[in-house]
Amino acid sequence: MSASKRVLVTGGAGFLGSHLCERFLADGLDVICMDNLITGDLANIEHLMGDPKFTFHHQDVTHFIHVPGQLDYILHFASPASPIDYLELPIQTMKVGSLGTHKALGLAREKNARFLLASTSEVYGDPLIHPQREDYWGNVNPVGPRGCYDEAKRFAEAITMAYHRYHGVATRIVRIFNTYGPRMRLNDGRVLPAFMSQALRGEDLTVFGDGSQTRSFCYVDDLVEGLVRLLHSDEVDPTNIGNPHEMTIRQFGEAILRLTGSTSKFVEKPLPVDDPKIRQPDIAKARRVLGWEPVVSLEEGLQRTCDYFRDKLGLR
Ligand code: UDP
Image 1 (spheres, protein in one colour):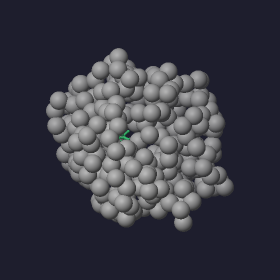
Image 2: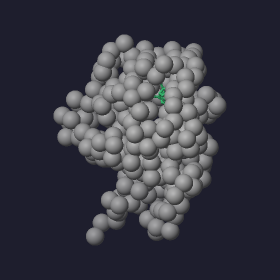
Image 3: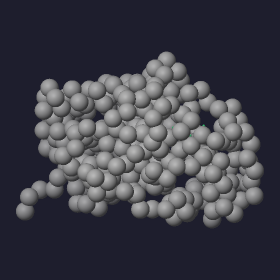
């Protein structure tokens, strides 16, 4: 019998990383989770700690990383990823996107491992093309407050392609659109944890601007399925993974109010600088190449997420 495949997930104690670790364990792989825990949380992986196929390395991926033994896959998910996080941690955000991606690619080259980069819809900035297709180059303000994240991820994509072209590393790039689900951090400032905790506590929902800006929200299980399919595909160029079901932020808030049965009202707050006005993934490529599309409805996904937040807030 051949030994299990081994996978390294950087940022493995984060929201998406922890779901990936879980998925790979379920698929029978040996999983090494690396995280410096600046935005990740051990509570996200506590339930995996007793599994002999799971190892946790408390390490910063921007420094030299050493992992003994063979590695078949590296998924580079380490990065602050919510607007509040990267506003508070702009230097770490730039370092992990640049130096961290370089280190993770070096390790992939050394181990002859397949590498998957977590990129983002933020590479499209405040888009002038709608919905966003992978061949759109984006409209990013490099010197605005979001520039540290957007440009770090654009650099990460560029160095990933350089390692592919120059060193022949097998690389994959996913552009992740807004994703939600259990294990989002309560206070990460993103719209879902904000609205959900406000609705559950009977507080006003803080809408930034007039709430007419749009987003398209993907449930985490759908996203993970898309990522795993991309990893096992031959697609080197960036691929959008997200849910094309677009809505305004107000409509999203209304869906959360309906689901929680809350009578909270909306209160408007200033719109953050460079907040994209519209966002919707064009997933024609993922449908064609990966045979993938989201299957979890907004109601179903919000219900599962709400159960998690009720527990976190001690409301059950
Ligand atoms: N937003 C909001 N209220 C909040 C948090 C966010 O209205 O309490 C808005 C934010 O301005 C943006 C959208 O919701 O237009 C999504 O924000 P999020 O931070 O979740 O992610 P983004 O898509 O901006 O990266």
